[in-house]
Length: 135
Image (cartoon, helix red, strand yellow):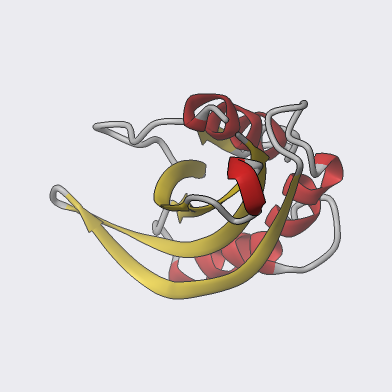
């Protein structure tokens, strides 16, 4: 299991959404709209004999907040469970993440609201992803 390969796999899947930048690392100065992959937790030994680990990732989607309604309309499309702009549909379009994982699933969205980075306030939402990976 490679956390870096899984992060890259998630960023690659997010890159299939037209107009959305994606990053497998946390950038110093994000340029919205952007989806940033952030490892959250690894639960080792999900299967007997070290056969499987369960990993939790957050995908933080950041939208420009020049117009509150415009930013919310953009973010709402990413939060949909289906469609060409859906984070869930994009990630689950290849549940093996290019062979880096056994399976993955977008399980929840939370923290929809303002996000302050430096002196700029953006609108953001966080998506929780569960990944099963062979060890």
